[in-house]
Amino acid sequence: MKNELKGLSNPEKYHDAISINNQDIATLKDMLRTMLLIRKTEQQLALGRKNGLIGGPVHLGAGQEAIAVGISKNLKKTDRVFGAHRSHSHLLALNPDFYRLFAEVLGKKTGFSKGMGGSMHLYDQPNGFYGSVPIVAGTVSLAVGAAMAAKLQKTDDIGAVYIGDGAVEEGVVHESFNLAKIQNAPVLFVIENNLFASHMHISLRQPSDMISRFAVANDIPFKLVDGNDVVAIAKASKELIDDIRSGKGPALIELVTYRWYGHVDWRDDVDVGVDRSLDDIENWKERDPIKRLSKSMVNAKMWSNKQEEDLNDELEKEMQSAWEKAMNDSYPSSDATLKYVYAE
Ligand SMILES: Cc1ncc(C[n+]2csc(CCOP(=O)(O)OP(=O)(O)O)c2C)c(N)n1
Ligand SMILES: [Mg+2]
Image (cartoon, rainbow, N blue to C red; front, side, top):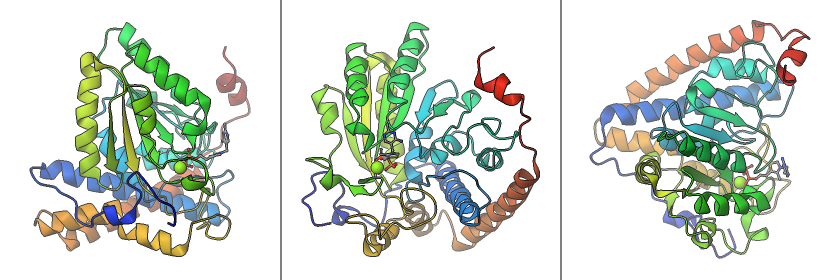
């Protein structure tokens, strides 16, 4: 990248190994499994889209799995989590049911939104996922409202919302930060700073690559963390979430990462954008959040290459049968449009 970057986006600041000292082995294995499951689910979606089997667009977040997995480690089923257009990982980290995601994206009635939503309208309230929408920044104010409701209901549940580096260019995000602070709303703003909005690099859109400057402006506590280090994310978000639950008001966590696929579908987008080259993609793939965790675990003799191969095989098998099952499921009947789209 040619621009001077002030946040964590300078590749030299990323280290290969991640620190797993004092971490519980079962938790590390679980996070590794979930990240791998999300990666493979999205690879299957990329293939389905490429082969013309999926009707609508899919926005893939491969490379960014550590964020949702690390954050969700500290969330409860009664929390109120919101996503946007690139939210497969946000949902699967709460409920790793890839079969229902496949069914949704294929428009089948067995999907998360009964086949009425597709990739960008996901919903799984029993597991805390209150919804995703394609309107960039469209759920940020909803998360603040849901957090204010949780407070009025005298629970210790929180709101959480995933926000892209591009989404902060929408005014409603700043109104939401301000309102959350002034109302002491229990909400976590999770910034997924992948340096791009559609095809434009952040240096062409904003005077700084550090989104957490908006937390400073609103007197909201924040942490800036390597978005490809799941352990660091789980640890930093735990501290913020504990504070939010104990009544200290909103907090923000900024995670710097990179998406492997282009803006939408399976292509690389090296020919349409500025500053996105195959070299950049390769460099970021070196910082694969899955490989980094697995390597640290192998080094610590908690995990082996054989175990990883077995896990890969197991997930691949499960995924193939889930995909076939979803492909054979039925589409919703036409009266579902009246039943689920309009209030009764
Ligand atoms: C209100 C609105 N404006 C524009 C778009 C078109 N659009 C879809 S995704 C996107 C970029 C979002 O970038 P970012 O928030 O950084 O998320 P990322 O795609 O990088 O995950 C844009 C401009 C939209 N969906 N909604
Ligand atoms: Mg972005």
